[in-house]
Each structure stands twice: as structure tokens, then as C-alpha cells.
Amino acid sequence: MANDHNQDLDRVLLTADQIAARVKQLAPEVLAGFEEEPGSTPEITPVPIMTGAFIFAADLIRQLPQKMQIHLMHASSYAGTATRTTAADPSQVKIDATLSNVPDDLTGRHVLVIDDILDSGHTLAAVTANLKQRNPAGLKTCVLLRKQRDAALDFPIDHVAFDIPDEFVVGYGLDYDGYYRNLPHIGVLSQAAIDAHR
Ligand code: IMP
Ligand code: MG
Image (cartoon, rainbow, N blue to C red):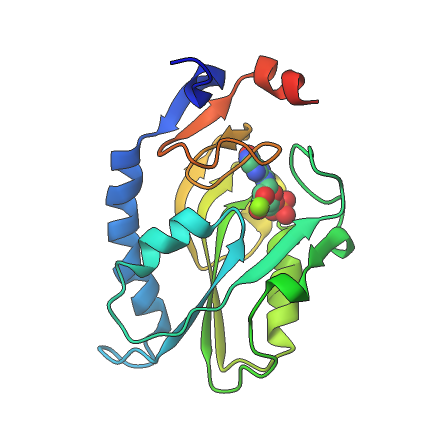
């Protein structure tokens, strides 16, 4: 098909079936992480980080039948629109209050931050610092992907669906310059496609 996003992939890293199976397995692990005593989980408040986490979060929360309220947080890097990755440091991460609907006061809430990928860790550092100021009773972090690089491996994170090589990936919510989020799988973007958007 002309214009097919798949033409820009070097290879598929994770198929839609592999992702679905892992998300299904991850849901009870995430719940167990909130248990204060065996079998008793408090009400959790998922906070998906927009925009990259929207598909992962949609699938993960539908594996959690518990009563819950979901709040969105919008985080982006100041580093420009076609950025390959990330902000140079945590102060470059912008949390957009007008696009977010997290209550100022999270007292008594058990927050689950859901993000697409852990790379430098700057996004999650900024997001968790922001949320902690709202006084949650608990805060856990969950990412779909973690890159095999020192910064990501050193960042403390509660739940990781997949560890992946240090390559630029797109699909299942992850973008390059806003594109590719609709792919049902996750693939490695070709260098030619990266260069074409520059
Ligand atoms: P960090 O702040 O460096 O941990 O990066 C997290 C953010 O960078 C993610 O939410 C993504 O928006 C972006 N990012 C990092 N690596 C990739 C990638 O391989 N593909 C797409 N986006 C990425
Ligand atoms: Mg993102």
C-alpha cells in the first residue's frame, strides 16, 4: 500500500500479539505491587503520560477491572518537535497543566504512572517529582519499554513490560515527529526514515 508506515521500519521488534500477551501478564504484577497485605489492593489512580502512553495505557487499564479514576498528564521536551529522543536534562521537560487533568491534591491516592519508554529517565524524573508534590499516599511507575542504556537501567522503576536494545523505535503509541503511533506493533525505524523527517 502506498504511504504504508511499515515501509519505514528496519524490522519489527515486538508484534501486536507479543505486546498483548505481555500486557495481560503485567496487569496482575502491577496490582500486586500495590498490595499492602496479601489480597488487599487499594484503589489505584492511573496517570498515563501523554501522548506516547495512550495505547499502552488503554490496553493495560482494560486488564484491571478495579474501580478507578484515570487522570492524564501531558509531558514533552523543550528540545523541538522532531527530536529523536529527549530533553538534555530534567529541567527541559515541560508538564503542560492545561492539557493535564491531575488533581492538585492526591492525598490518599495510590498513583500508577504509565509511560511508553524509559530512555534517559528525565521524563519520569520530572513527572514523579511533580506528582509527589501533590501528596499521594503511594506512587508506582510502569513503562512499556526500557532501553538498554546505563541511564535507563539506573532509573528506579517498578514495572517494565519489555527491555529493548538501544535503538529508535516507533509504533503502539510511540512516535517520530508525531508519526507512526498507529502501528499495532513496535518496530525499529530505518535511518532513511529518520533522515527524511529531519
Ligand atoms: P526520557 O525522558 O529520555 O526517558 O525519554 C522518554 C521520552 O522520550 C518518551 O516518552 C518518548 O517520547 C521519547 N523517546 C525516547 N526514546 C524513544 C524511541 O525510541 N522512540 C520514540 N520515542 C522515544
Ligand atoms: Mg513521549
